[in-house]
Image (cartoon, rainbow, N blue to C red):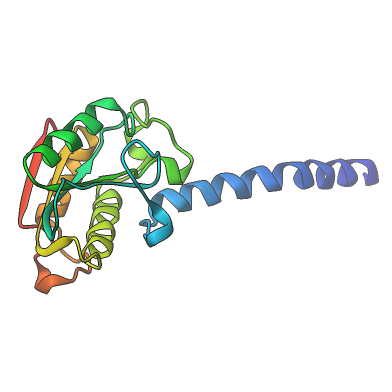
Length: 176
């Protein structure tokens, strides 16, 4: 009996850290990300927020780019470049990398679109602090999982936002 109790305790001691780590990972996908100056990098930087600015002096209107289930890649960076060419600042929001994810295509429920929408709101809140950005002219564009995120951001109820409840002046959702 004593041997069984010791064996059970040893098994629990080995399994408990794994269970707690799994629970912590689940919790991190359910909480929105917050951003500050340390979160931002330039184009192709791989930072949680990649800020692309058009040439010239601002302030510029801005568009958040919300990638699909496969994370930030060349397709989304080409969209950021296209937006910059049209005179917009573009902010690519990486909702996966900071959560230790590279792709959620096989398990899209890993990151709820409503939580990713809050990531977008928080990115916009940070963006509005920058002098190069027109705080009242920020839109959002999303693709696939990011398209669902853009829809959640457009119709969000109960998500705390600044700007009198109008965080985005435009929303585009590609194949949500």
